[in-house]
Image (cartoon, rainbow over all chains, first blue to last red; front, side):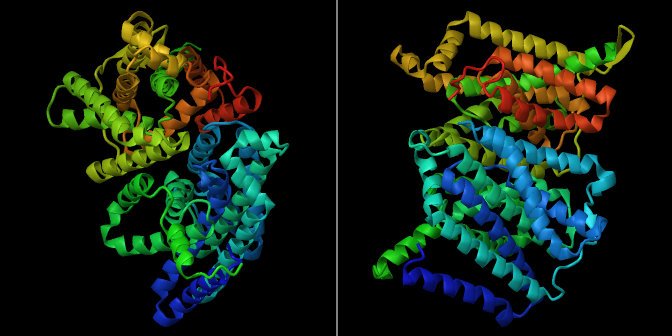
Length: 312
Length: 284
């Protein structure tokens, strides 16, 4: 996908636009919106790497996001670690969650994985409320320190993380590894017959996906300067999934566009306040019906077919 | 001790009403319906709305159940059926989207504050030295009656045989001339109506608010995993197990830990016996 000049040009253009936008517009509000968009893009890319490629839909991505954010919150405020420990620690904790969830459920066919992820995210949110003495309950944990003092600096850091993560995941998705994951999506039985340890690949990709989502959760905690149980909500997972669907499943770069597009749209819809989530769910239903292939990745493919000279 | 027995029976009855419908529609149509909890929520809200408009409770409850049953049929027809051709996951995805849309509709219509569904029975009874609210007792009795009636319907009538036939072998059933689409609609109506009844019965002593669809889904899923996907006796047994396990933990340890049980049971069961107690190995 990135062997062609046109893809590199597209990626460079995207990065340039994202980097220059806040400077040109130069208002803090837009920078904040873009930061949130970039973090959502990290979550969407990580979801796509596991679920888009293997076709095992994860309905509880918010489990990893919340686990990462709470790890950051506890480390930073309760135990007083420096903020830069948060991201690696969050990645480790989220990986453990991925192992605990993946081992029982990914060995099985059928909907067990999807539903078990949904269930555990719901229950984690309940636990955060029930054990309010430690977690702050509805309020969550406040007083998380910023990682980088300047808002623009943090935005560039988040953008760099997004670009790095996306590049690594695209490289992985285009390697043999990604091929195997796609093959699992196509025909699991054949993969197994070919002597591949299918379960290992699925669990490993869930761990990678979870770790990145957890790291993104930690970044989010350090951006919002607080952590709340709302992160675990089903809505968080559905938002991420909608972004992937809009971007185009299994394309890795599509969900980045989907995330940024949807966050900006949501900001435009801010006057609709209460209707925001309703609009989200309706968009999701419409996309499932009319654009199951998504929207951004197919557009780019078409654009490429027209203007990209086949100089592989 | 007596208290645990009675309270456990009440929560088991609610869980069974939820899980039987959830597993029934899966067994027959291979639809895993994440909007099942929305039926429960819509039932409670329907009863709330109709009674606040001045209808007496019993007709309000029946109307609400009928409305939810129709909603279930329409949902299956409009949203789920096109997705069934694609994959099981497309069905999960669309039902989840519908569930979110219903939650948001309730939120926009009624706000996020708790609503009160009036109780059918306001008296208190004392059984074996335990005080129990009449509404809870009614829930227990109604749950047993409704599930018993459903069981008889499936075992004893022609339509019930058709339902059984489709769940055992969809292709053969089609060849025998059983109209599977119509049967799906019927099963969806039964499943939705049963969930709505659970919502109306449990509404007075549980919180009625837009997000109330979530926990029932988690519990129903745990129950069908433990009982075996698609098995009605399994889901009844597992509902009893979960209902009592939660009640015992609530009394012996603390209510804080009850919520963990369902997920823990799900994960452990999937590790040791993915097919569940009564499940066939080839649920898929």
